[in-house]
Image (cartoon, rainbow, N blue to C red; front, side):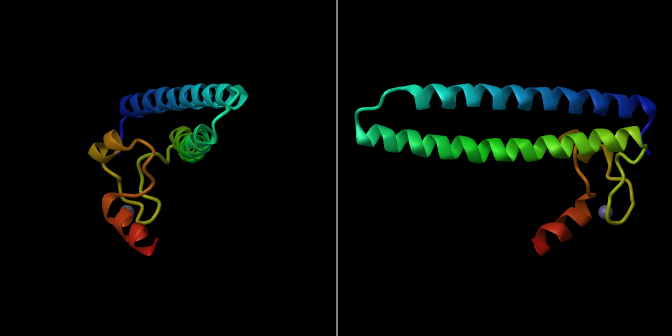
Length: 117
Ligand SMILES: [Zn+2]
């Protein structure tokens, strides 16, 4: 089990991470908008911009997904469920949480989930 102090540390970590992602999304949206408003004369340039936009959008989706995971982890901290594997209900382990604070599963279960797809 994690101590209250450790929980507090993970809470801070998750909140900081969330803020950072929101900033990233905001910055890339601004960049996208400025690209869209730029007059493009060359067709090749337009193609490049379209590709960049698609990559940005995929990245944003990934980041939004991560925010959801972080919010869920924060919810679990509040409800004293944090750090417990959702599959086997064992402790996830602090070392793993340090690498991925929003982890839902312990290392063993994660492998099972990933194999299942
Ligand atoms: Zn597990």
